[in-house]
Image (cartoon, rainbow, N blue to C red; front, side):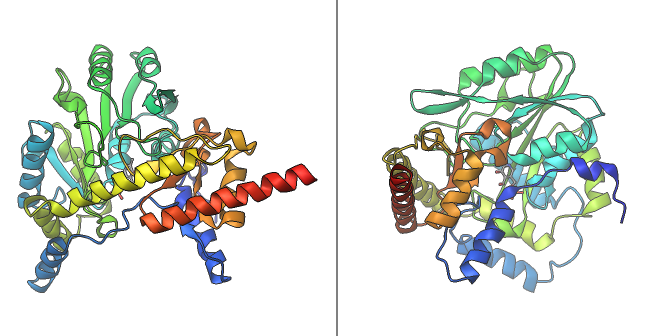
Length: 395
Ligand code: PLP
């Protein structure tokens, strides 16, 4: 079958491919610790699951409006204003099956071939995939390390913003680096966006998985509400990856265009899922809070454990649930190191280059796994690397 040429430009998420290889090893009887997939290992809070089940049994099994049901859009607007100080009502909110479609639909709605897009690299791979797919021009922005922390290279982002820039995508806390933008970073990015008339996609999916600081959204800054689309959702905060529930908060004038794309593709998000989403937002918040406390313990274990391994150097992530160690000291490329961990240590991790070319020299390990498994993974990596060093010395 002859596919359209644009398919050659469509990227993917390597996590699913590595998961497939890890599962194949498990079928051969190998024990693998899974640190490749970006999803909480906790169950959805029981009150949320019950709300979904109740909605199903009460017949909430029909289409809903493309933008989402009113009670959920109202609950989201209220939650965004309480948590982030966003001024929004239900007409600013569009609900989608997972947060990912917001990236796709927004870029589809905005970009003409050749438009410049600033985005993080290393970053969530779907950003670069969509830039390429739509024939837009890549402006990838890397990261810097300071005092054991990663930061997005805001100087570079501001310096490369021009009248040719149509869209800037930012992601704080970041997947894969765990970097968090400071209030001063946000101010500088906002001023440059206003000066150059740039639209901003602020991916805030990890905004509640934050360890050392309060969350600040760029959408609260002067001149930003009318040019910012916030992406957020339920997958990470409420351990609801498989429910597929996310949303965009955007200028009211843009919402009908995004809704029309939904009408063309999904019709709507599953209605019972949306009802579970209302319960997630208005119900008790102890479960997500406990998840963050547990992630913090795991983060501390992983950073300390990785820094104790020769050839690894790990910065402390400020948010999300990934650690992004520098592995150049091992002498391996990122791809070699990821394969070595999988086949020799029995630990599934992702090559830093799965997040773009600037990820070379790094690995991404998700710590959405039990403390016990994380300890075992650290031990396996250490032992496998020591055997490798011994074999290199004796050869
Ligand atoms: N944005 C980032 C940075 C992510 O890491 C992810 C999921 O891994 C998403 C968006 C998509 O989330 P969802 O599963 O709700 O589509």
